[in-house]
Image (cartoon, rainbow, N blue to C red; front, top):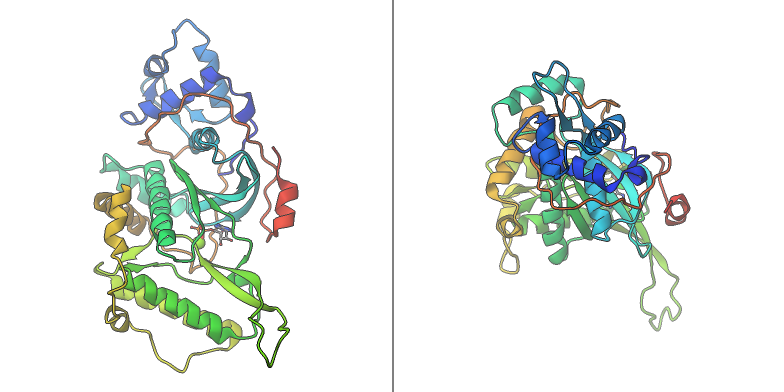
Length: 402
Ligand code: ADP
Ligand code: MG
């Protein structure tokens, strides 16, 4: 499912109204009857509304269902992407969209920029697209749930990611700065580095290893387990650091320091979760295995174990697993998302990048529960061809199209 922004600039304000109306109608209808779309959009039926509908359908932003019993449309993932981008544009979060830099199992990652040219990342959550096998699982699961749909679940994943990034950042954890959240998308700072997985050698692996274990333990002190803590979700930046001059070394050479940033939070869990110990151990083991395999480094010390983590002095720490609820990401939402992820077998990055199906049609998209309060306007967002290469800050600047 590619994000094709070609039509973004050409939509009229009435097209946007009809698109927004289709999204709103999707709250109660899997297939939104055409008269309802017209009514919600507040347009007269004799007006150009059928032309608006046909423009949106041609751009694959809404679609008809095969064998439907009545005339109606539903929002596609493409339509949802457009609504989210438009909202980010109106909030002055995103001004231009650059290249795609990542295709995960459950997300697409794009570079983008703010109106002032700050380089950011747009993460579009796409739960449920993982493989053809899961399509049936999706349908079976969602059929019995009123609040369930792929798009609703993607929205929950984005909301959860944003909420955790916010509280982790506030409490001094090294995570990207969250900049905005809308529907199934999150905007955050671009980290100018590479996933740990791409690093083949380092001078002092024990140093980074120690930092990562400390991070896992500190998370646990704050009541949290990342749940997908591995070489795919740790970005490494190289930063120059010069130590203070001493008498013995009055003119010290700058040293390169590897600085880790943790990303990817939809599967984060509480240390009170019934499977906490399993996920804690898995996080620790992923790092141990990677350092052994890649840098032939293994620590002399066993663990840390979950018991060690829980026995830490927590007097300086807050319970972020509880505090996160104050952001609006409730326990009920967490349960809904977890149930869905478990059912369709979403289990993080450890297995590598999946075989993502590139479907142009949105045949299997269910209804989407969304809030929709943006009026229509044409965004200034354009896009160049996607690539999947690594990047540097200077590459990215030249890829931007405004
Ligand atoms: P997924 O849930 O699909 O694994 P991630 O959040 O892990 O998505 O992102 C996938 C990839 O996109 C990362 O491995 C990284 O290469 C890139 N990426 C994600 N967020 C950022 C960021 N803030 N800065 C730079 N690169 C990022
Ligand atoms: Mg990831």
